[in-house]
Length: 153
Image (cartoon, rainbow, N blue to C red; front, side, top):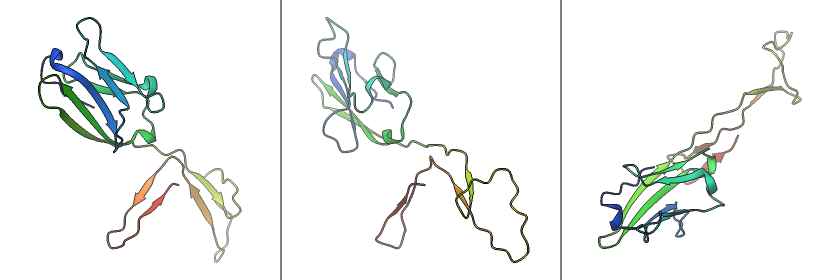
């Protein structure tokens, strides 16, 4: 996620990353004493830990997150505090798509059906099978209702 710094780094005070409506940053870059040392990076261990790195040396500066997790999804805000000019804020909506696992087909008693054949069956027999897939999250919001249905299959 980009956090474009459009002025010389000597004019930057701090770069802070927030998620959703949190008031506490989950990643920060302290550039206040850049002349005598490198910028100080901090990543909240309970959120990203070592998975995140802010690359301030390339343009545009970017927060790189390795090994994305489903719970990383959300609205991120990058705030750049400057020494003498007004703070700038950028927002990004990060969507994480989790691919489903292999489907499992079960018979009416919950036993795994292996292969592609079901039967033998006779005309008029009832067939009850269940297909289970994990790793998919679906959120359905009805348009003409005041309720929200969320399923986690």
